[in-house]
Length: 351
Image 1 (cartoon, one colour):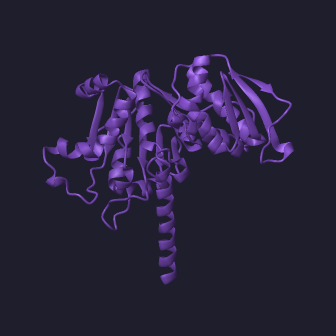
Image 2 (cartoon, helix red, strand yellow; image 1 turned 120 degrees about the vertical axis):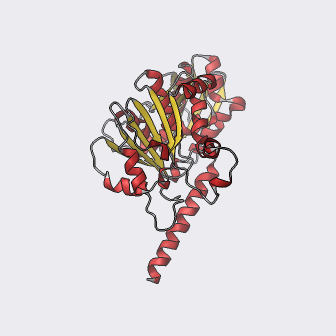
Image 3 (tube, rainbow, N blue to C red; image 1 turned 45 degrees about the vertical axis):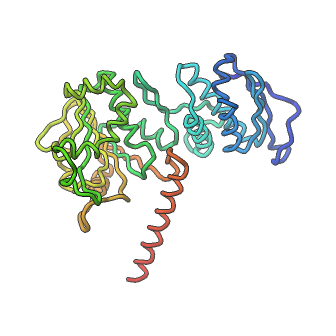
C-alpha cells in the first residue's frame, strides 16, 4: 500500500450506527505527492467527502478518514490508486479523482467477479502514449480499453460524452508508438445533419474537415502537434470521409470509424471488409442519434445484430452513467432517453 494505515481506537461520530463506523489515518511518505493528492485547498479530498459521504481531514501528509465502513474503504482505495499515479509520474486532475471514486464504488458493486476482493487495490485499464496516460474512469471504459487490447474489431456504442471516440484514438496512437501498426486511418461518414455540405466554402477537404475535427482534437491530445502534422503529411495518419475507403485493403493499420450510426448498411459492410492483415478496427457511434433519411436503416444497428457472437468481435455498450463530461450531460441524456421511452409507449398504445 502506498499510504501507511493507522487505525484509531476512538472513531468520530457519524450518521451510521456505531458498528458500521470506520476510522483510520492514511499517511503518505512523499509530502509533495501528498499535497498534489489532496489538491489545491484540499479540493480532491472535499470531492471524495461529497461523493462518498465521509469525513476526510488532512493534516500535513496524512488524512484522517471516518464514516461508513464501505465508503471509507472506497475512499482508501481511491486515494491509494491516485497516489500511485503520482508516484508513476502522472498528474491527478479532478476528473481523475471522479474516475477513481467511480471505480472504487464499482469494485464493491461487482463482487460477482471471482478474483475481486473488497480490499483489493484498484487496477484500472489505461492507455499510455509519450504525451499522456489515460486511465479508465468508469467500469465500462475499463471494459472498453481491455476489449481494444484483445479484439481485432471493437464496437463502442452509447451516448455522447462517454469517451468512445477519445479512447479509440488514444488506443490507435498507442499502437502506432509501439510499432504494432504502421499507420492510423480515421474516418467518419459525411452525413448532412440538417446542414448542406455543398453550401460550405472551400474544396472537399475544407467541407469535410469540420466533421473530422473531434478526431483531430483527440490526436493532438495524445501526440505532440508537430509529430501529428508530420505523420499526416507522410500519410502515416490519414483522416478521410468514409466514401474514400471503397476499394482499399487496410493492412497493418488501426482503423477507426466514428459516428457509425450514420452509415448505411452497404457502407458499413464496405468498411468492415476493408480490414487487412494485422489490422485493428474500432467502430463508435450512438444508435439514438441517427441523421440518415427517414426509412434508411443504420448500418451500425444492423452490424450489431449480424455480428453478434462472431469470433474476434467485441461490443461494449456505454450508458448515461458512463458520461464523463459535465454532470449536466448525463442528466440531459437521461431526460432524452426517458422522453423517447414515453413516446414509444404512446405509439404502441395507439396501435
